[in-house]
Amino acid sequence: MSDTDCSASVSVHEDVTYAVRDAGEMKLDLYVPETDGTPPLVVYIHGGGWVFETRKNAPDLARYAAEWGCAMASVSYRLAPIPDDADVPSEDIADNPTPRGVFPDQIVDVKAAIRWLRANADEYGFDADRVAAWGASAGGHLAALAGTLEDIDALPGDAYPDDAVSKVVAPDQSGTVQAVVDWYGINDLLELPSRPEGLESFLLGGDVSENRERARRASPTTYVGPETPPFLLMHGREDQVVSIRQSRLLADALNASGTDTTTYELHGLGHAFDAESERTAMERLTADPRPAQTVTATARLEEGGETDDLFGRIPPAGPDAIERFLERTLA
Image 1 (cartoon, rainbow, N blue to C red):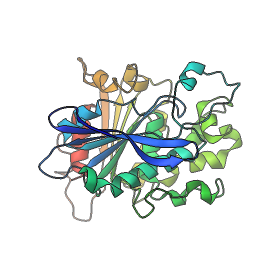
Image 2 (image 1 turned 180 degrees about the vertical axis):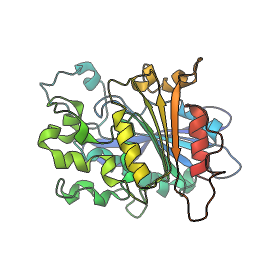
Image 3 (image 1 turned 90 degrees about the horizontal axis):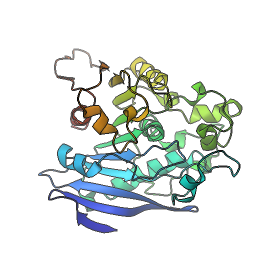
């Protein structure tokens, strides 16, 4: 672990091991701002179709840690294995050191990282009681699943063995989060077409059409309920990689459960908001002219409650919108 300053106000802890699996060590990078109080934590989960990329595939988390006053952790998770005869770029697989495994290894790792971070909050200086998950694409799926699935023990059903979700890391800590930011994630795997060589097939260990109960248990929409935390969804309407229908399906489920939900639909934008990767996706949102967008916000009120102070001014999609959402939900 290295402790250096990326700026005058943020301490960086890179390559921190949070779990040791049979397939290898799982690591995270942590950025903690120097603030007057104890900052909340945002756990970032990278995209890459569950099979590509690393935790370095993330927005400028050091910058947002400083600007938002939130600790930020970018976590690795086991990537899905690729069959030897699969038609995927081999160099992208060979050069990636991340350990691999089939679902539910991915969400088991994400929940383990959240529990480990909570267990070590005092050492690093952030608030263990205020934690959000933020992810993009495949990471959006895992962030949403981390939010809707209260405890990893509830996942197996008849689809997975109980020992597949064993809580080895910080088992006494909670893996729940208090808010979720989901960028163009897959939220209902049952809505995907049958594709034996689709990336979702690598994730599940088989085609969705032949593993429907596995797909259902791996879908965030399955677990939405009255206790689901607030969600912020952002998705391009022209996304040809992950259909915007995926965010709409989750938004419908969240709204039906009375969950505090804010949805941004970006007109004319595709996957990653037409940026090269999620590293630069935020820049596309803030470039002039700002993309046209439709914003829908709903919230659950207690009896006799007022709406005046729930949302206030809603900024356009981008860092200001995320910052305001985190301020409101992690207060």
